[in-house]
Image (cartoon, rainbow over the protein chains, first blue to last red):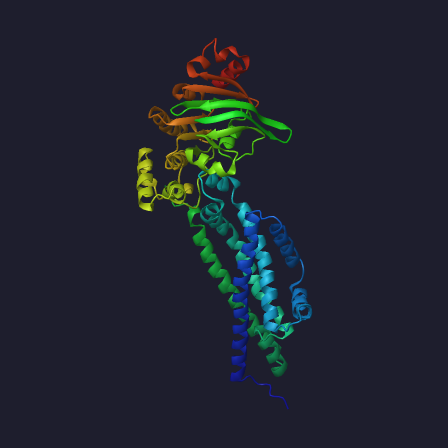
Length: 223
Length: 244
């Protein structure tokens, strides 16, 4: 006989899955952003060899399915390095790399959206390339890039659900477990879907608030 | 002294500057006239080290512009005002002016802000210190641009068609400030289409045509019938400009 009713324990499983999804999302967003921005810096400073290399890696990562990358890391990397990789480690590596690739693309186009004359003006006034980046280019690029970044983050949140296939018990995996046991797919997957939806809304709204602040200078306040 | 010796600049097959020799001594106000595309703005960009020279040398007070190590020192001698203002849109007027003094000259913030407010007051913008460029009119933006250049206490002020993007009323606002600067002994290299104004404030006029320096004469000689006007190309240019 199977026990098909919902229990308090199920809620715990759900919360645990939610926690794993959020934690992985936050961690890979931070790591991915740092790496992606670092790659964009290589390009800004026109670093020989490294800049084209970063561009090529980003190109590879953003043009292949995340699931394939995940399998490659989870099943392939341990063979190559002769080490063990836990599902969570594999998920961290894959999703960070994927986020990095897209953050790189967004950062590069945001930097290019800042008029060339802005950088030239700063340089003519004696600012170093780094000072020009920090004070002139980056603040303006951030305003351009934040909208696309918000879209990316919402998407990357959904992408975290892929890691359930290698056995990480995230929100989707928790849903799959509950679904198999209770045989109530409509209730289970609706709850899971709503939870993803709420998280996505939260990300989009926080991003929109930051973006408004970044664009404050272009708001017309009257003469 | 700004020394320009045999400077050449090409963009592909197009020769923009062709063996320019020019000296600008402290205290001079030199206007550069010439049709669009004659290389005036490119010459300013070369002095600023924004273009790689294809020949010749430029030095500002002995600092070679074409040497990356000396470029920084050369740039500190010059203040530039741009045709399209090039203000930093995410900074207030005050921040636009104080940025380089604080970051480059290491002036304490308070002192930089006090000086910036004095400059703004001198151009009639004391009340607009905290406005962003988007909230200012074109003439006001260019006045901020002039303050930003002056805040670096440059020995040479480079003005690149600073009134070309302004309507006649705003042009008058900006020109009156430049006239005051010229009278106070500021050294200026003034690229312009405002011929009457150039005649009024300049000690010397330089005429560029298709990348060549056709004339470099004291102002009264330039406009004299047996001086600059004796050259057909200059006479033609001046008569065309006075008709429009």
